[in-house]
Amino acid sequence: MSTAINEISQSQSITDEQELLELESKYCSWGDTVHYLDPPKFFERAEGHYLYDREDIPYLDLQMWYSASSFGYGNRRLNEALKNQIDKLPQLACQYLHSEKVELAAAIGRLNESKFGLEGRVHFNVGGAQAIEDSLKIVRNATGKSLVFAFMGGYHGRTLGASAITSSYRYRRRFGHFSDRAHFVPFPYCFRCPYGKKPEDCGLYCVDQFAKNFDTEYNSFWDAKAGESEFSAFYAEPIQATGGYVIPPPEYFPALKKVLDERNILLVDDEIQMGFYRAGKFWAIENFGVEPDIIVFGKALTNGLNPLSGLWAREELISPEVFPPGSTHSTFSSNPLGTAVALEAVRMMQEENYEEITQRKGAYFLAQIRELQRRYPKVIGNTDGMGMALRIEICREDGYEPDRELTDRIFAEGMKGDLDARGRRTGLVLDIGGYYKNVFTLAPCFDMTEEEIDIAVELIEQLIRRCAPARI
Ligand SMILES: Cc1ncc(COP(=O)(O)O)c(C=O)c1O
Image (tube, rainbow, N blue to C red; front, top):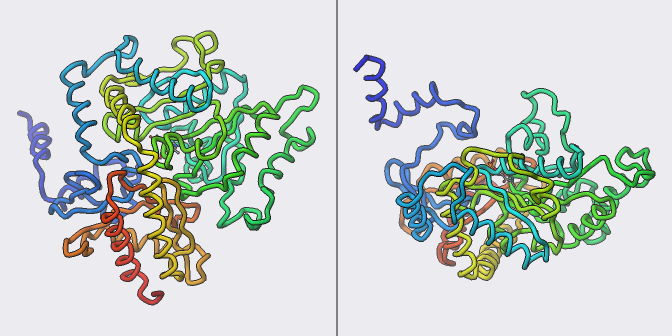
């Protein structure tokens, strides 16, 4: 064995954490999100809604891989589906068919027929951003236009195409000119209304403002003679995920959809984070009573096992006549391990009453964090939730100014792994989102019991008391 190979094989058995961190620091790209915590944290195993570190200390996870593992780490039924597929048909080029792909597409297609009364087809890919790319192709192909609307605070992924419709300039700054950058529209983030209005009496001012863009051709959006907009679609997360689990008022989407229909603009519903019951319904958009033209999904479809994403589009946008073979493709797009787990997950979602489960447990959790807000008004400025997507917005003493610094401290303190869960040493895994990076976006595991929710809230309270002793 040459010296170089010898060194590589030796590096495979390193157990010392400090040594691993040094290697990571030298050999791993820092381009991902790992270095948000210093030093970055290692985990060794996962079970249910706990992650275990290298000393086997459990960390209660309230973010579940950004909602990709909603059904619990190591979910027996889904793991079994993966294992069976590994023994049966683990690999297959996507140019051939396998039954799981077809059954999965049919299950999602039929579900949408029953929910929206619309016929459509499903196209698979691997990651969320890739499915967003596919949806952009479908929109461009069907309309011949490349400009779209998207929301301020929206997040659709970090490929170049997805970055162009994601609001943060931070994600684009280093990467040149984005000629197809979306036109970003204010989201109804009523706690911090971009127009300074109050939801009680605003009369959906934000929708009116959007609609006004089409009043005359000189507003730059609309050619009245041709009856055409320069924009083809509106990309929307029904509940903003990375934006801080921001829930719009119930009247918002119906009013927006009316404007879009009048102007012949497609509605693309990004369900990558909120789909599959995170927000109490199979699709989060079902909470708002509008029918999308395209739905993009990913994450929890396979419970975070072999990745699979995809989109559903109305038949006239995706039929083989308009979107023929070869229009888009990835080697791994409908990989058999992913489709097998996803098929089992969709069957599980149809057999179990996840609507009832997520709405009941979510309401219980929300009541607890509202109580926490009542007790700590100088720390928590806003709480909200829909299904098991919940938000805690950390603010300064006035209950409004965002307190990013305290949010970071609470997050880091949870990662120390020395909280007291009724006598058991535990850590707490939280995720930070929000326009000001001051929101804990909670995506708890659907299997949590009420008692476990109580414990989770006790742990959050311990963190508040440790990190903001002067404000309690
Ligand atoms: C709403 C939404 N869209 C798109 C994406 C991108 O998905 P992926 O990270 O799998 O590319 C995410 C990821 O967090 C998301 O939350």
